[in-house]
Image (cartoon, rainbow, N blue to C red):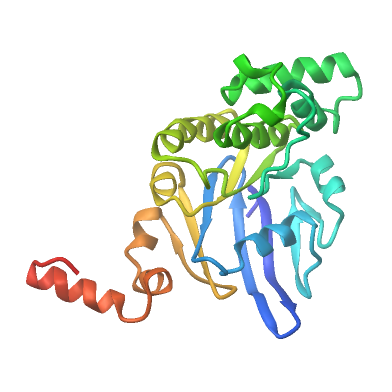
Amino acid sequence: MANDLLLLQDLSKSFGGLKAVQGVSLAVPEGSLTALIGPNGAGKTTLFALMSGFIRPDTGTVRFAGHDITGQAPHLNARLGMTRTFQIVQPFAAQTVRENIAVGAHLKEPNRRAALALAADVAARVGLASQLDKPAADLTVAGRKRLELARALATQPRLLLLDEVLAGLNPQEIAEMIPVVRGIADGGVTVLMIEHVMQAVMNLAQYVWVLAQGQLIAQGSPAHVTANEQVIEAYLGHGTAARLRAAAHKGVPA
């Protein structure tokens, strides 16, 4: 479709005998906030790596903003406007929060003073304004997650790929981060997130794709996919859907 910012067509990748991603096709509309979910080992992070150029697919194509970027280097994709975060947050520990965010800003802003000013603006968007001059090493886990988000946001992306930005956070920290992510999307950035925290997926995502064993097994609204029997089986094991149905019928816990 004309308004699809990211388009994957029949994307596959194997590592030896392991088929990590198998024939995945999906389209991310510009201006949307969508999610990719699935059990551990489903291939979600591999799919992100294929989208963003960290891994080259065996087959299939990746199109972003009308350009064929299949296998194109990540820094070139970032210049086009696609930026990703990583599950394992690795800030420049000896630098301040402000300097860390400015690293992202320098992708498109060569002037140091302007990059630092942009860093302050981005910090305010993610709730780090009061910690700009703190060494990154002194941040909490939640603070480091916000810093990873800020550094990506400072590249001024059109599409932001969030890889488990809520992992490792406690319930209160998750509740505080959800409006931050929503605010980024409301500000005009298209967001595609990998997420295990279903509270966040249900609260944020307009559309969800479910990956299991490298293949898409369901897609639709969060309510639709979480009621899908294939999805329940993928997350909770074979026979779970039938047990839940039987329990619901009898009116007892599964």
